[in-house]
Image (cartoon, rainbow over all chains, first blue to last red; front, side, top):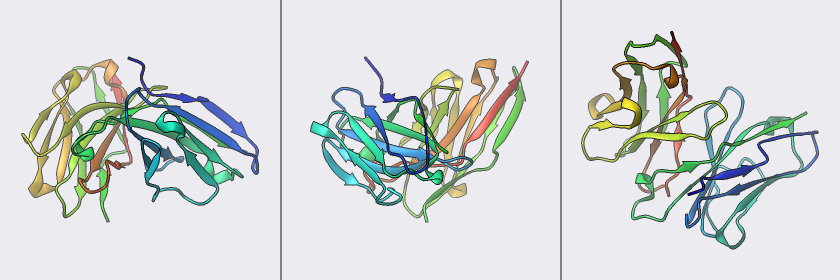
Length: 117
Length: 114
């Protein structure tokens, strides 16, 4: 079974440019999460999809970030325009639907390292 | 605020000696607790989880953790370190009413010396 995949693995862009990160969850997983780790800080939650619907986007830092999940399959996270403080590693995770999501293991992708110059 | 504190940012042990990675959480609710590990250039992998069953939880690769509610701790241990254990370890908490959102500690980098 394929794991969670993320593309690209690395991205280097100039301040003010746009970048789109992609996540392909494990097939059949309804829940998809985005997290981010900026340099020297802990990994922080960004948002949660259940199928194609945004369940919780309380962690999105501002309106320069836009996440979508087309047809409840893969997800994209767009940053437009990118700022220096957006640099970090962006992780995607997925989990199956279950009675209690707090108990579910989340399966993580390898992350996308974003550098904004 | 709900939070997780990993007490050591870096731990160094010799191969064959015990490992102790410390974690405390703060909350007024009963949490689910996890330890994840990240090897270089890999995704985070679940080591073990506590979800209100047995307080001593056994995980993969010989790791285990004990949930101590009175101390709000969930320390990770292993009797004998192996070189392949060198990685970054994350203590993580989740709550039943938050859709599975994970709250991470700052991470502990484990080095294993030959």
